[in-house]
Amino acid sequence: MLPASPSTLSDLPVETVSEIFSWIHPLESVKLRRLSRSFNACLLDPQYILLNLRRCKSVSFKRIGYKREAPDVELFLFLEGSPHQAAYVTLCEKQLNQIWLSLPFRSCLPAQIGRLTRLIKLNVFKGLRGKIPREIGHLVNLTVLNLQNNALNGSIPIDIMKLIHLEYLNLSCNQLSGKIPVELAHTLSKLTSLYLHKNRLTGPLPSTLGNLLLLKELQLNDNLLTGRIPPFLGMLSQLEYLHLNNNLLTGPVPEEIGSLDQLKMLHLLGNSLFGPLPAAVVELVKQNVCDFAIETWPAAFSEQDTCSRNTLRPT
Image 1: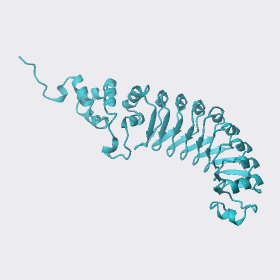
Image 2: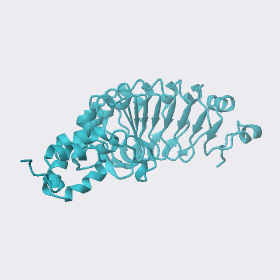
Image 3: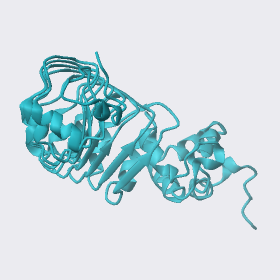
Image 4: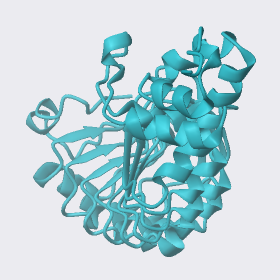
């Protein structure tokens, strides 16, 4: 006598249900949890979730209305409270070397990010909120850390100083506050680009920035930075772009800025600077700098000089 056939899906063995549902995209299969308790238990089983994530790696979010076409398995790292979050880390921690995302929802950068130690590039351009977790310091192979255009708050964690291979650091256009950590520049000797603009950073520029000898781009504009423009910036001989505009900086422009012979762009507008520009800076602007913005209009510039620099503005 043949065994009775199952009359409903809920009568199927768990292994069979897992095999069938694991081919359905997780965002769709989660709706099936309501069908029965057995379905719910199956879809929350860690082994099922791992299998499901493996099989959805090549599926794109484009088909359900998101703008960016990407292996959407990456997004499960940011699903707060979801069992898929931990499963994603388990699945990818030994192989993932790059994340490049614009999140279609709001989420925190999870502490589990610290387990993805093979990461070389971490780019999340939109959707993040909350604080940057200290576990970011575990990503010791990072060369690129780009978290711009999010809603991150709190201070910049000093754990970033552990990222000794970092070449590109962009935390701009967030709501970060507090001082720029002095410790950052002690170990980030490979840094060529530092973007911290459009935050709420306070305090003076740390003297350790003078240690970043490979730096080509430094953008600290649109913060609440105070004190004077430090002479040690003149030590950054590779610097091409310097943006300090729209802060609370005071005092004169230091003569040492005139030694930055690679400089192409110098923005100092929107501070409380005073005094004449040093002759070395005037000469640098005439010879090298194609984009120059400052409140003062030094007499050392001729009318022809000022007309060729459309951001040079008189007080």
